[in-house]
Image (cartoon, rainbow, N blue to C red; front, side, top):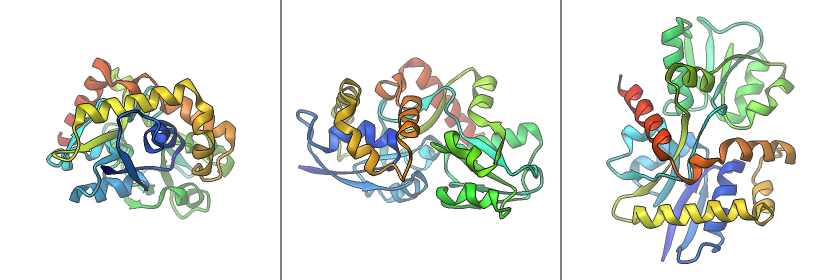
Length: 259
């Protein structure tokens, strides 16, 4: 049996799933892997094309008829939220570039803008890798960034307007749910899938050297120290098991999507 799986080429995902997709998890099937940014998987998962898929938590309301949320494998934590960056020109009543309309990052930005009164004049969806250069060049007044941009935005001469993860944590007292792993209903046993993923995470933690070449080969020219920082931030205890705090955080975010 071979299953399809889709996740991003970011270091946290390749680190987490290396053992699973390389036959290192006993009892797990083989996998056909699709690499795609989360905005792509948020949309492509609508038609149920993948058996396992990484998506934004903010996209769950559109996907839970077809998929079941797994309690592991995703990205959720503290001090790891999206950043809203500017080139020094401010944000209010400007144009902001975002990585996707159904991303957790965009949901948080909307919630923060409503609370703070700093509402952009226009929002444009831009491929993630074009956001920081676009803000630096003045094409956009601000940019909403995720993942490794937290470690590299200063290179573009940009400044942080707000850390949306920090804002969420202060406002709710909860960790921030970013990326979720879903299993297609009727195609994958969610209990089995969760155990495969947990074993994959544990294998990666037990011997990080096993996945090193795989992670670096997909890391989009990130320096090794940035890769290490990325993994350390986004692969944590919530990756192995959401637990009560993670479940409360997910419930709070889903409530916010329908508010």
